[in-house]
Length: 307
Image (tube, rainbow, N blue to C red; front, side):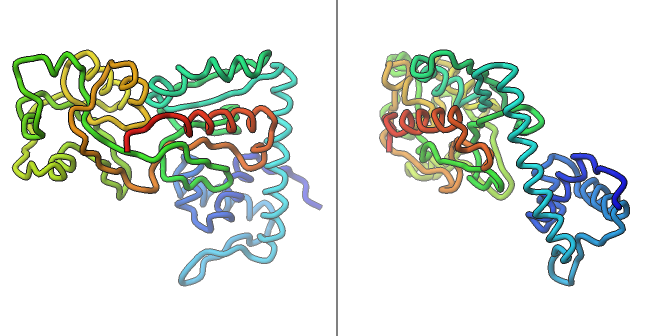
């Protein structure tokens, strides 16, 4: 008879490793090192006196015992997540916990959030604005709005926008003595850069836009470099230079006249990268989660985007 109950850390490590069949991918999902995953599973196996995972020359696979236990652990963790969520709802009343990255929250979602609040009176919306990736279970999050490649195992992910990138600036900048009628004129203006990267991905930058515009001799010069699209766009609104704007983030500013698009030329981001609304598969049909997802997808669909 088994005389111990393993900790949730070991169970989550085993569930992720068994689902991915990779310590590295499991570690990335759980924000730990592959060595930590390996150690937790080895300890788990020693306690059970069972081999759960084995490596062949080409890949990792679950043993027959591992397959049986993995199915049970997956179901148990899903049930535990649902129970914790329900307990929190019972404690807090009707509450929806949403996490969103700074740029999409500040420049698109928050200005529209009042419509959702009016449609769901009595619901307490708790918004966590952070560029740190939150853990749904550990951090008590129901829904996330994140920029990524759309691959979120164990979660439902709905794409909000396609990405179109183009220069934007304050209308006041067009009234200065420096012309801004041709792409080459940008070389006389301060350019605002966003320092963003992902492994193996080149996000549209000024060099790429300049090449598309026929400015083949563009060379980077000192400018303003920020790690946030929201801050880059705010700097452009304040007349501090010209930024590359994402159509979804600048739609309201263009409509209100806070920003203008001096050139019609646009370029596209990597096709798989976009903003997504994400929720765990086991809670995707929760009434509040479903209502929020339906609302935000409708808002995204009716947002006018430059193509």
